[in-house]
Length: 218
Image (cartoon, rainbow, N blue to C red; front, side):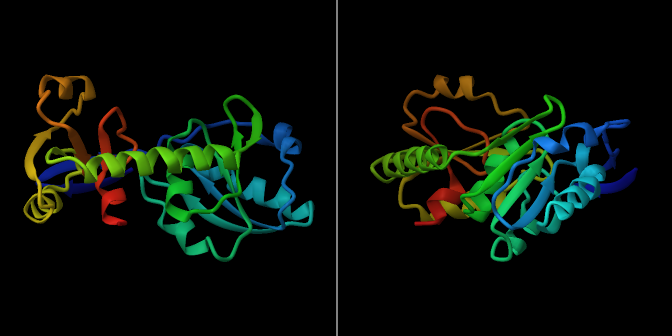
């Protein structure tokens, strides 16, 4: 357990690890042809990465542990992207894997889901589809005159300074909308806003929502 003060509020972080997981029983499902593997996990399963590493090394693979992803932060994996041929993500859900792909641009990503006990590979066609969808959103933003800028007040996602700077430099009629809970359905109440620019979690997606990070890549 760790205690910090974030934005003036005392915050307690409690590790939520999965206990008593017999991960050895489904490690044999892992089938990776690449030789140099980077291991990444969500915090729930990070304690099991050593067992995965040991298994892969017995299979003749060279393994580097990037460790856990915290929210949208894939910093450790980014440092390894040029040293590995593929990543193996150990965890559940698509939130972290999609961020891993977006951050590292690596096209070889495998999943080991300890909850479903399934192993799979992220298809390159899916990556291409994500890129096309992202480019379409950015193109719509470029052709739009009036935008809304979404800001979250949640610790770790609060980017008001970046939002205000973008508002002044984007060259569009822009309005900042700030809230603790972002309900994308409520955005429809502002039907004069043509495109929404998301400055908080990049996985906040919906019709007409484009990530500030994607715009800044232009």
